[in-house]
Image (cartoon, rainbow, N blue to C red; front, side, top):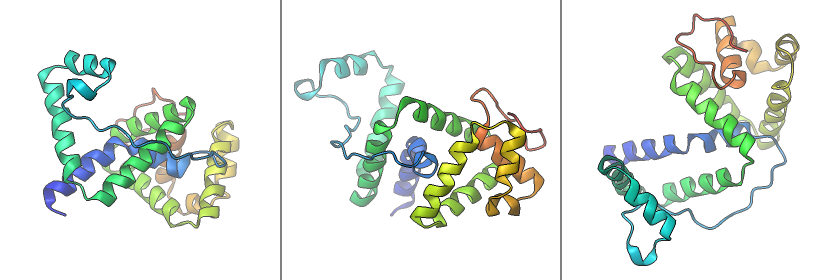
Length: 197
């Protein structure tokens, strides 16, 4: 893979970041149905594009159209296996209930505003989740979703039963709680701020 195609894969992968989050954080027991392939953005050709999609395309600014064309060029440069993984994530994403998609979009926005230390803690969390066997990952996701509904004091008590959480410093725990449970409007300017719950 060339440096340019790696960059393209990264840009496309960040576009489907909520789906990756969903794979790690979605509540267990959701059926994953395989849907038809996702449509790829391209400069539309009138004879095979639905009217509403054509109208949306025409309403875009030249800059927006060029960004879409560039993403499509990057998409075409990706190896077929990478494209299929992205399409599968997109199919799963479309099957999620709106509440879960909203939660995962909020996590993406929180992470976008995070500093390097906070991103590091979140990367460690994802790495740990990926390292778990499927049953362990499902059990951890189930606990995290249950903790969301608890008052902060009770949540903290329950989270201390999680070995990964116990290994973190107080500052890292604060970051992980912020990432997993902060309200959508809770933005963070630096790791020195207290928990936002």
